[in-house]
Image (tube, rainbow, N blue to C red; front, side):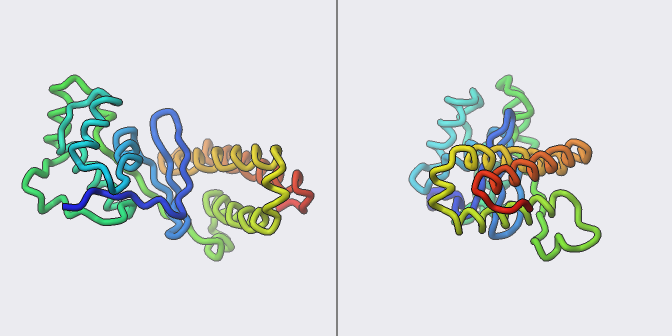
Length: 213
């Protein structure tokens, strides 16, 4: 079996307190990874073996050095389309069920929050965002793509403008948190985050001397 390799091209990454948000631009999907899966995704560079990744989880999270934890995380990543070379973990003799992984972590005194888990949501394209039924998540994705196009056209100005860079980082952080809130059903929180993202996007445009959204 080849060493796992994560997909990193066209992926926006935002690290939060207890999770990592990945936004896949190519497929218009947002993924919320808990600490364990995020660490496996980061370590899956095609060079490290499953055993080596298990060692990283043990050293950094204090969970058992167990291949089954990594395999479960890889299964979650494969389902989300975040592994470059998918691994059919269901055909591996050592594959362990989620229930068994939970039992092993519990016996080792590890938190249940460390059981590999990924939540994914589809973010509609800008064309879909023009629909009357479109909500703030779709608007955020549309605005992000518009800002990317403007930055590409004004790359030199953006590279030398600290304010524009700061506002873009703030906008992406707010937007990604909004996607998480949306996934978790916190619509009020999501709306507030997407509104903040729109304000920061306009801050980017203002800093570059461009008209607002």
